[in-house]
Image 1: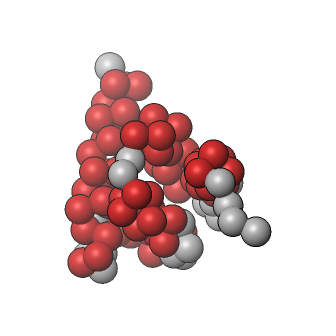
Image 2 (image 1 turned 60 degrees about the vertical axis):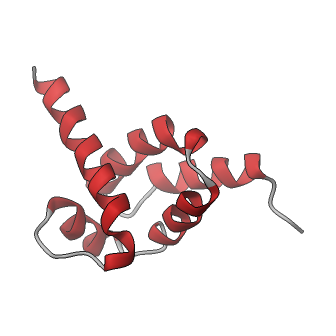
Length: 92
């Protein structure tokens, strides 16, 4: 059975909010809520692959503690910037 685009976005949004760690829930969930619907197909496919990665690795990559795989570099930079700006707005 082929997954519809609506079902795919719903699955990806759910996986963004229901990670293995609360930190990644709070980083990926809001980003997915705001950005998934406007991403092009290539970026959606890349983000779908990113969701398969281990949360501990993802957190280290997003936080800059470890370099991320080159394939994810641009996408993770966008997600990290979004998370930082969101955090700064909450604290202000």
